[in-house]
Length: 236
Image 1 (cartoon, rainbow, N blue to C red):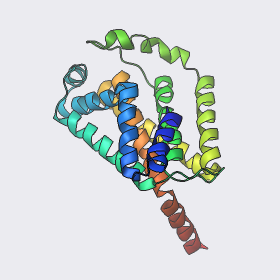
Image 2: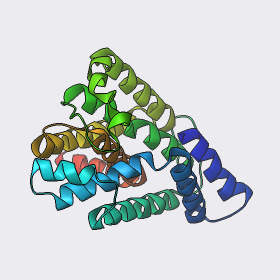
Image 3: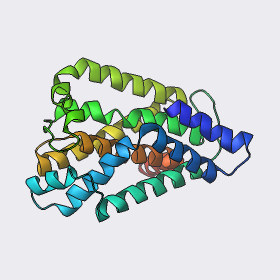
Image 4: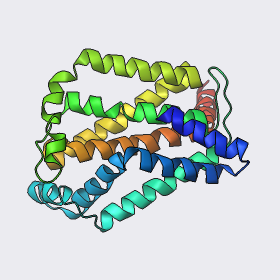
């Protein structure tokens, strides 16, 4: 998916000579259509449940409701706005081994490593059996914990790290993986505290949050590295 989105962005941005922000809007719209708003639906439902529920049973009841409330609309709107703005700010794609820049490489990397959060949470947290209209679709996830072994999680992490390394080099790629796993871990702690584990919608929302975290880090990496070097020089 990330590669497909990058091709669409570069086509609109380079071949059609449209601004990066317009290209970003096109690829995000195509992504929503291609995936059926799969993760975005989880983000909206999780925001409604966590924002409007006061107890575990109330949160789960709200999350399994197919309707979208105020918290869900706000979270979904901000997610799409921030994503388009970040991709637009990254600008035209520049493809160079270990030193890529622009939106195209960022799309591929963020789409890949954000999804690393799902097997990490499935492996490390309890999965809550779902009820409601989505339960037939997510019933297999209860057994997924035993399918996602530590070995498979290591393989997924290694693949994500290798891909990021090809695009941005070893230092930035290690930092990206660390950021995504840290965000996933914090989200998992939130799920444990409020829900007693994770569920399908919560995994989808975590992927969305991790994607924004990855894009933010990629966009700000030059400033982060410069600040780090400056701080190190101060202590030399």
